[in-house]
Image 1 (cartoon, rainbow, N blue to C red):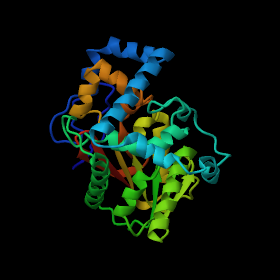
Image 2 (cartoon, rainbow, N blue to C red; image 1 turned 90 degrees about the vertical axis):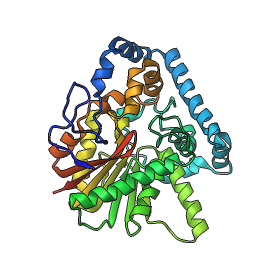
Image 3 (tube, rainbow, N blue to C red; image 1 turned 45 degrees about the horizontal axis):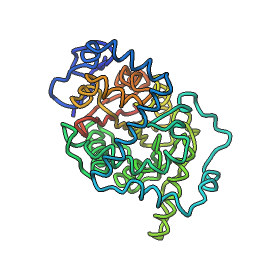
Length: 351
């Protein structure tokens, strides 16, 4: 664990400061690996505007996810079919969708190898199974060993490190009211609930399809347990939650910022600061572009092409100086720790 000094690492330029890193070992900056393949990266960016190339890239990415699922014993198709069948999903959609919500432009484009991004049933019904597949190798530094429990290990590592960092940062406010930004189908919210069992949660997402699945699964859990969950799923933007100012103790943003343009991330940071009570915590779990695993991707234009096919705002995330943005918004005690060989947990307190 380490405190992030002022002027954190900006991955878009060569910078030797030991700042935005999760491990104590020296890490190469992104620009060092980018520079040798600059022309190829530009070519890939150009090709992604060509529909046949885009369609080929996303089909390859989706097949890799399904194949990895089969390797860990996951019945990907069967799990999705079981969720799909016997449910009036359009009725579920009407139950969660805010018809007055205007979706930001950055959200209405392809994501994660889906032409309609997160705004379709295919993405919503597959996301839980896809998470198990995508995160199967996440705890292996070489990214080769597959573990069926990789996704749960990733999420558990986030909250364990969050609690440690909060203690080190001097966070003394009890977490009674919490917000999960970009909750998708609720996997991140359930992990937060396990870490803060006394809290009530507001879980937000821009995709009504994801929220419909989240609420449907919640109803199944409540029916099985005979108890209601302290989680409210809300169709809203993370940068405009609609929550009153200074009314929550914890804001969590788990694996969301790499899917955003920089301007949206800055707005979300400002919104988190607004809704937090003084002494409240903003917690983030994200991919670490300086990690050895991601450096291997950035050194390989073909691996980068596969990755970029699912993450349209990847380069804007990489160029973000996250610690600096947090401080500029008024947060203090910016701390981080490695939670996997490719991800970090970061916390910051509202003064």
